[in-house]
Length: 393
Image (cartoon, rainbow, N blue to C red; front, side, top):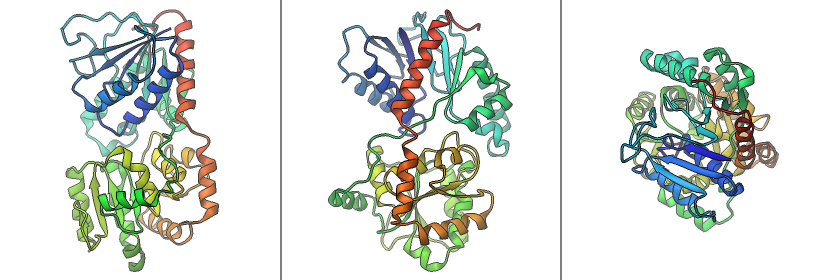
């Protein structure tokens, strides 16, 4: 089987990058008998990291081809020499909603991770909603199969895009092997010093977009008893943007101290910015509690990553997060600030260093793995290829 995999959306070491990096590497490593064609942006360091990792796999010569693409994600029309591309693969997989338009040749597989612009219309512009709906629906109709990462997102695709259920396959995300309890105290101390972390803290990982609901998290944090606020400050990763500035101003209006530069004495809230991906497991190990307050998640990987590091987690009771958290995390109504505050306080007072909570997290995490995802994805490729010919464009 010959497979084309387009990694051009994996442009940041977050978001779809773990999905692309882990699933693609595992499929190539486990199926060296197949032929692989990788479309990529040669100026993207995260994509070059993926390619460098693939190059370490011991494949027979000619089994994998790397094709640099100069055009944007909606096009496969030309490569760097501006020569038209005719893809002769059995399957072409694009792991995002904006699959290239006009592509002909292979059977098409796409991944839709979430539909938050459509399910939360007040959290993005009308133009973005129109664009998202048109491109996502058009591509889902073109595709032979649509992969999605949770049952909740499958329901959204059916309802929002009017795509038949039988065309959609749920393949859950996984967590990387690097996430696990770390016993090396010296290493943990080094990471703590690197980011000026306090001894105990609440950890949020992700971006600061409005639908991530950090504003209500901050308001709920402000309701905690003063002793808990001081003992467990809020540490947030993610790129510093204008949204971050609004959140800092909100915190200050609530008489909380907030900073983007870790200092001593510790602020109530610290925005660390983008951190090294290799440091994230240590942050989860150092954290007292992980929190995901998002209004909508296509999957919601953060609570799972916290659990496998032995750290208790709390999360929203909406969208896909209940599927991921199971019965191993406390949940709250993300629209209810009082409920978030109450759940925060209950977890801080009862779940930290609680062996029962830790064991529940470890057991829950066994349901998910990138290995399982990769096996199911490759099996889907075989099914699509055996159906004979591309889907009508």
